Length: 108
Image (cartoon, rainbow, N blue to C red; front, side, top):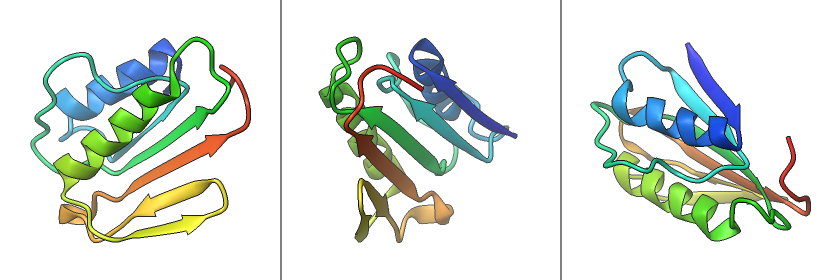
């Protein structure tokens, strides 16, 4: 089972990854920031975050903070950059983190 969502749904998918990590194989939030509660998942959760650099609703810094939080939680090591995306690998339990930015606003 995977969780994804846009804007408020992105915040919710982060929350699901934090509090129900045993139920979700991975999460893919779009256009939203990280969880608004303490995040202590039972296992590393693979994450793919997508955010627009021109987003006027959810600041880019919130998405970047979410990325950094998952990198830390998942214990990720090296990174690979491919165009607009960066993938953080060598994470515990295979919990890779992918972060992508595009030159768009608050859109799916």
